[in-house]
Image 1 (cartoon, rainbow, N blue to C red):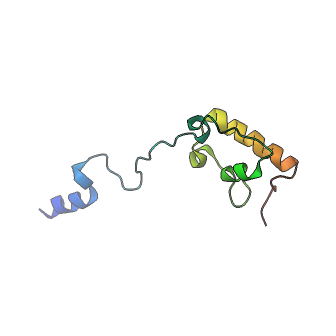
Image 2 (image 1 turned 90 degrees about the vertical axis):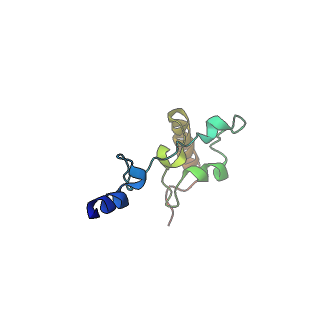
Image 3 (image 1 turned 45 degrees about the vertical axis):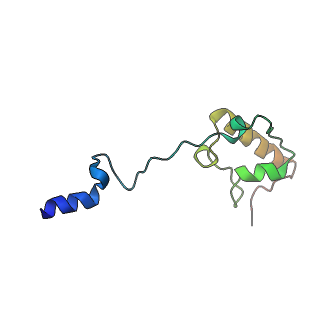
Length: 92
């Protein structure tokens, strides 16, 4: 009986695949695919700040939710914006 109680604590809803460390995450939708009117421009720093961390690093796909095609355009736009000094390379 004690073994069954302990099993229920570990195993929510008697699901054999339940693991509290690895929860299923909902797939993020690419912000550029979902909004067809949104055009990424390297001269628009405010728009690009959504894809850059507070330290100035480009956020990965898992954080932005962008598809591979748009992640490449985000990377290129951020690098161009850094080069023309619209975005800083690092934050102090």
